[in-house]
Image (cartoon, rainbow, N blue to C red; front, side):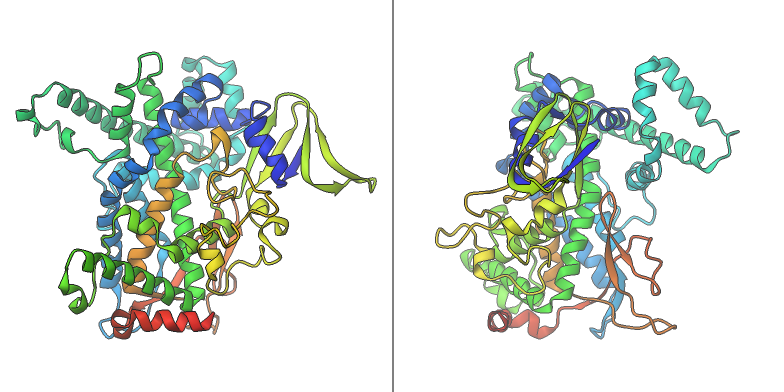
Length: 538
């Protein structure tokens, strides 16, 4: 039995107050442990608490400031690659942005999380490790029907016999497509494990070496790494762990598990979130112009503060904003938040009920008998399905237009919720959701909330702002040979996935095609005029 919920009070009890009763399902924990090791999403109880305690400060704002310079060259490289594909006469060209945004997200997590020197945006062919990362999520989706058997195998067979069973199942003489997928999954996980362990060993050796060096030897290198200049999450995590008391330190296996989880967690979610943002801006050229104007104003203000008189003559001023300047752009912030509200990358979550309880409701509902109830009895061993997308579109909290998305630019009340004179979006009559991000459930809440949401938000903002500065996006308009125009729709799968509706597309293959062109000269020199136009349009 399962109960499907999006009520704010019920969710508060599930993810915060009574989270010890509502645990991650066994199938979720065991599968994650088998694939990624002993990271946060594969542990429960005291082990999970201990990991969370160490990792919370790792994702602090100060550390995000340290990581932003790693992301900036990646965003610039993406823009340069796309610009090189466009016609010299300034006309449009249709480009499927999904593979390019995926490569950008992959470089972001590899370089900023692992410190791994990937360069998939320019590489003719992916190296073995980055190729494995790109292929993992599609294979997980294909093999979803095998997930229920993993806990049974791990609990009833020793590690030796578990491996023997996998050896037998993945033998070449079993020709079925399912077994081919299992063999490929095993190969990918082995490549990932080997690559992560290699980077981890180099990082750990570099850190230990730097700790024993005198200042004169601070430039000593181990392999291709410079221990004194490491600006990546693994480096930060290793330093935090070494500075922790021995009783609270994580094992190497646990640290490896964290990096695997963060890398995989930040790849598909960031790709699809960026795709949603560009899609909604492509639907609304006025919002796109307003965002571009805001970004250029921020660059201008930074240049004036630095007494850089060359800004006015620069056709393509680079985006090189500080962390604080980037994160405090109000319209960019509004675009990201509203997109993540309407299209949460992970639409649903589940919990297993370990003890019979009663779940209170903020808003009473009618039972099958017609009686109004304000609490629901939840039996032991049942399941709770948390609908993030339903919570984020709850009209009782977000307003009557909560399920319509944004087809027009935001007004000031929506973009600047921090002002005391304006309402806080997502809070009505002091009722709010228990999420860690902007009163919504996109990144969940409580001790099992998404640990990397600050990194994801920063990465999305940097990439989107860099793209908007030089490129203009529009929905496809040219008919194909059969007279059909491509229409993008978002399929509710494990993630919100963009596809092209039939008959112009197959409705299955993830893709997000746009007409892309360079920002025209008037867009480069007349940002204030575009801002005025956008304001009048409101």
